[in-house]
Image (cartoon, rainbow, N blue to C red):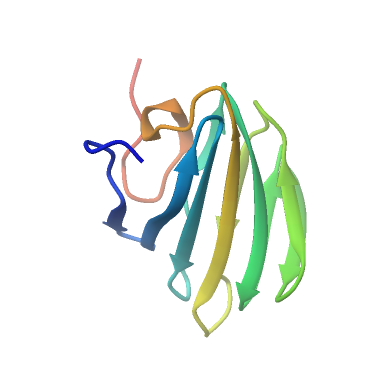
Length: 121
């Protein structure tokens, strides 16, 4: 990880922490609090692979709902609109592996957001 790279952030829905990164990849631990969800978003320069390590993830992938439980995984292709929600009463923990030419936070394009973080044209 570079010296100026952010390694942890609290968000209105929970938190994330970078566990490792290198050329063409980044690995994060993502915690989603019960009743919360991330923004519906896309990335133009990376794909993501989510492994649910605790809880149940309700995922929206290009409008299709996929439910993944502990031990299951979800693959999000580059450019695919996606969101993960925690519709249950226990903490959701995901290990996310990002693969691609660019894995920084400014590759997020928010399409919908519960916390008013979408950019307006």
